Image (cartoon, rainbow, N blue to C red; front, side, top):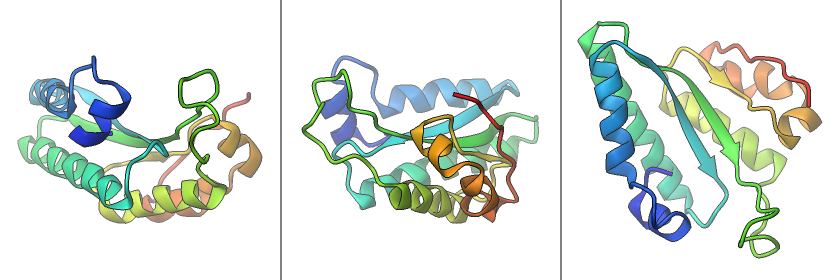
Length: 148
């Protein structure tokens, strides 16, 4: 999550949003392709999710303006899985509908990405290809089929 409040709460010893963005900027500056991601469902607000999308969108706009082939080629939303963490049993799990809404909002916000992916997770396994053929296609996206 590229929001400082959330990063400090869930990963206080890791580099913050600015460090992640700096690394991605450097990669894009030399023409590298990267993936934009968002782990969600761990104390962030809906406004903070939107802020995450805004920051990624601005970074993607800068990458595309360089016209050197660099930038995010996909966006992947990862619902937080609390099992085997200090958060186990303390947070509500993101619902299937929340997962699909997150992909759809990303698609309407982050339209400069070429692909949206429904990650191989309990959601993708349970919902099958549906995320790929509905919410994710707001980007005219393609999804990889994964077996778990």
